[in-house]
Image (cartoon, rainbow over all chains, first blue to last red; front, top):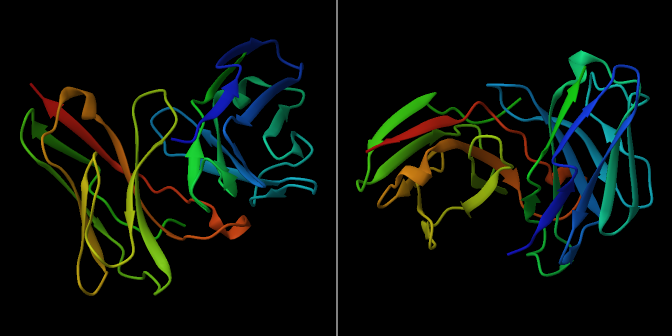
Length: 119
Length: 113
């Protein structure tokens, strides 16, 4: 099946630094990718929709200047957590909607997630 | 807001069928029912989806009521590795930004040895 890869899987950083998380669709092209955040024992919360070649669309309550999203190609979207604080510690998960290649049109496939710990 | 209602938790004996219910009484005519599961500390895994007919694949079966207001995911022979949170989601299935998945609280299925 279609594969979505996230990197890094785990990252620890100091408060005030920025962290970049990559999301790649390995065997299909994805014009749309989604970023989620999940706190312990909670469900996934959609943060933003990332569209290739255009600005991301953020869900209500998500700070676009803090969570920078770039979708520069049909196989890569990045999420940068700027000036990270301990409350940003969370599990970040991306998903990609297949538009061509090895994924059924419109289906969503998820990465393995990236666990961010801010000290 | 999520448009589905699921029980928070269920137990199932290993080797027996696990039947996970989901209510989606406000589902629209063009919305599909999707099921994903999330094993601890991993990304969600697609299981199955359907519109109005029952569906079966190598992982599970999906039974949708005739009025489409509820559905049941069936794992025919549950194993310990099926222990996970199962999410039932309604979603219009086509490409584009409106194709996003909104997760509810899901059902924690605990398969007991």
